[in-house]
Image (cartoon, rainbow, N blue to C red; front, side, top):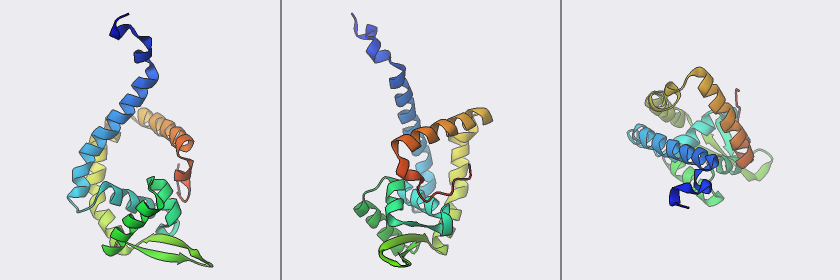
Length: 162
């Protein structure tokens, strides 16, 4: 048996995962200049978008950590940085002094409004715009199934219009 004759190496599951990873890495590389030009990181934009799309533009710190796949200390550092920049503020949960929310400030919403046109243009050029409507619908459906299976905590606090 030669190296290329091993059926294990041709498993379509490897192809699917490989394509997903390559697409993700390529997309991040194409999107990075849009947020860097505005002085933000991809993680900053991710957190600001999640807050902007959540009820009351806020999330419990634990939910933000789950949605961004950060540890509690990681999300604390992220919110510290965003709070220092005036983009979010912490709010104590009413009736629960242990619970803390991260809430998008108007300055944070404005920063997001500033970055989103370029970000959306890049998404359209490199992602959604290269797919037909039917392909995009199928992709979104499949990605939700996978996301909900591998990362069920990510849907907490999200007001998903779909």
